[in-house]
Amino acid sequence: MFAVIKTGGKQYRVQPDDVIRIERLAGEAGDTVSFDEVLMVGGEGDVKVGAPLVDGVTVSGTVVEQARGPKIIVFKKKRRQNYRRTRGHRQDLTVVRITDIGGAGGKKTTKKAAAKKPAAKTKADDGAADAPAKAEAAPKEAAPKKAKADTAAKKPKAEAAAKPAKKKADTAKPETKSEE
Image (tube, rainbow, N blue to C red; front, side, top):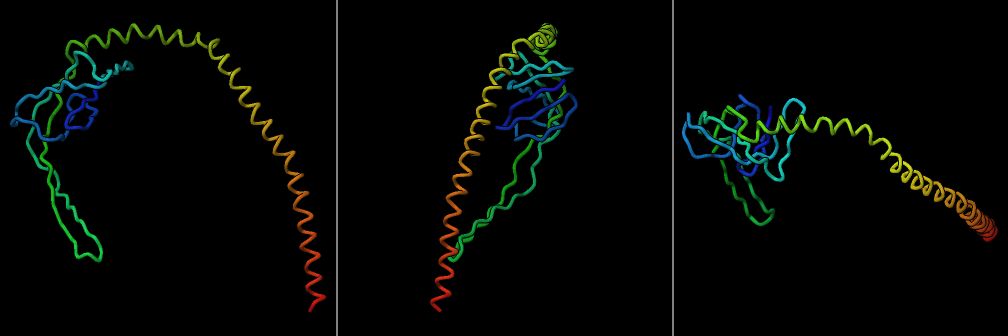
């Protein structure tokens, strides 16, 4: 089973026993944290997507440690202006081990997914419904063929127009030779 949670302005796909590094949360090593903003829950073929959140599902985790990320150097420069600024940043992070995905909604999602499986069987019966969609697509394909025919009809005119221009250019060359 997996879940997509939102914390610290980012989204994470987590499973039980995953260790994730997220933005700083209050708590010390060994404390339990709960993520209520669950965007999606899935497992073994059944998926439930929230709109925007899945109701009643929570993800629990244990704080492993409070850490800091790598140092990031931010360097700004404007050329020919003698402007240079260097700033550094280290993000405070919390390392969390996911322990459980569930809650009242977590158990319901597996039952609802079983109810949705017969709906997937009716999808095969929708072949008749797809036939009109294919019929609509056929005239759209025919329209570009007509456009191609129109462009083919225009090509000889363009070629005919180009030939006299070449003749004029050819006649101009001998005249220049005779003048020399």
